[in-house]
Length: 511
Image 1 (cartoon, helix red, strand yellow):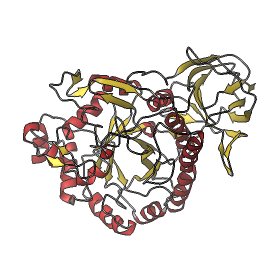
Image 2 (cartoon, helix red, strand yellow):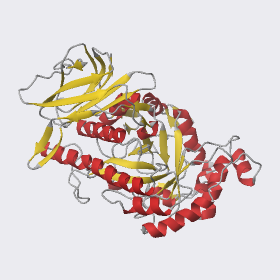
Image 3 (tube, one colour):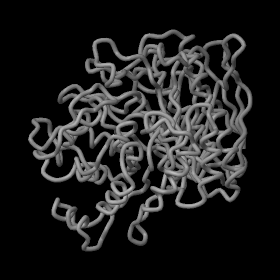
Image 4 (cartoon, rainbow, N blue to C red):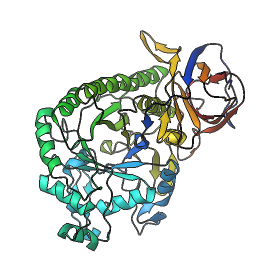
């Protein structure tokens, strides 16, 4: 059955788009009875590092704060994160993880040592949020825990004892210490990372040296039956495939996946990354071109896994990704606070569609970061809070958590500048856990709409219902004075043609 769904100026109150003459012609075909890989819910994971105002103020305000809170965590942020069904949170870093000593964060908060956060702003870290507080947080969210252990400056014994403290159900001294600190039952850990960025801030190691350390540390990660987390090796970044190759070829046991990091910098230059909110269409294109390199980077790393792990046992975990711009003027550069525009939203959806495409290997990702840091879901200002455009994409795409992907082909439509080109439209199709079929469509072009012809076999559908996210300006953002400039609008159509407005994201159910 062929569907052409038209949608020009149908997209909710406050959004008005005329149909321009120049457009992309895109066709998508799929047999809806076919099934691909499961889109693991953990692809929608978050990252909360001890960095800037990401945890302190952003998430944690303390039990005695005037800001309404539960167990010290601000209720407005908790409720917002629950609404997008956060499945997984990575903590305590990042670079911070390889300087974090877990015993500093247990016991009476008034007696915890104060350290200096040497990575991020040189601020005092009073360890108010430690192991117990973090698990309170993920339990309040209904999320799973991804703990990153300290390989860089820690010891095998320290890491092993932390895992015992968290997971033991025996009457060991460590388990009883946990009980004395207020937690009777052991916690569940979904993932445990052995080090972070071992090629850089985690120790400036070679992959061969890291392999030996990994084997040593992983040997002593011991838990009760059924409590062992998935163990994550610290892998490479950007265009590098060496770490994936060496680790997957050399580590023969005690490894469930390899991490990978890639940040989108509009200028591909760490000394001149680009402005978060003041940019041109040329900057928009450069950002989209940079982020779409994720396609090649995933493909190349997965090829190494396929060669060394043909049985497909290892996952590829993109546990740091997102945009990274120049520091916002007037703020501490080490706090990595940045605003978030429609550009970030479109970029997020593009990456989700790539993660879905490679879902057979990509089982988990963590955007950097959850609140007030880099490409955040939420920004706070004292007791006030706003939701960013990126947050709304997570909300729209939550229907894909643990959905079954449906293979499809897509043709036509190029978004070009000079001799560089990108697909004008990217997509995902999947059957959700509720049995419904969902489609996500992203138009990367900020100036031209795309007419999309849908050709589906083994499905009798006549309409779509869902949401669209777009705005008039490419630099549109939500501020504390105007919190709803960029937000989803309802989408409903029983028409026979679909035209995606420029710079838009649609997630809809087939009806």
